[in-house]
Image: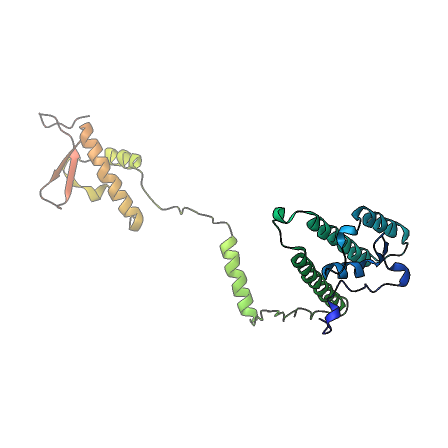
Length: 265
């Protein structure tokens, strides 16, 4: 803010050229509007003798006649004219009906408000005069940072590559299941063989004697199991007799005989 007292005294003459000064002409007064408002504030002029209608008409004529009038200057004159009309209306009211402060207090309030308006204008001008971001000054760019590129380094010999390829190939290759052919004797073969051999023998014979010759290993075990089941089936049919003297003792069999001791056909 300015240090001199006239910086905020908006009742002082506005900074305008001679042709931009609003001069009023009444029967009891002739002079600038700001001087009239100053004298009215100090109660040195009788506002009752001032015609508000003439004031408004002269203000409108001044605005319409000014071709290059500044907006701020017109606003100042409008505020002054409005307060003059307000002060006169307050003076015209009877004292008993006045519910608002006296014209002197209102004039003081007007003075303070105009000072505040001037301060705000000055601060606004200072703000506009400062350097602007993006026009006068520029912000510091945001850092981009560091980018880390990671690359895998593989070290392998030819044997490692071939072994890895073999493992992948083995995992992805289709699985083929082959059932190996084993030498076995079926149950039907054992029934036919035991039935044929037991009919040619007259006495008891061990089960192992009915096995094929050379049946060893897997074939021998399969022939023994099939022959055992075969004699059980033949005994159920009544074609053979089975004898075993004890648990886990050798099994003997012969062709079945009737009550007279003859071999059944």
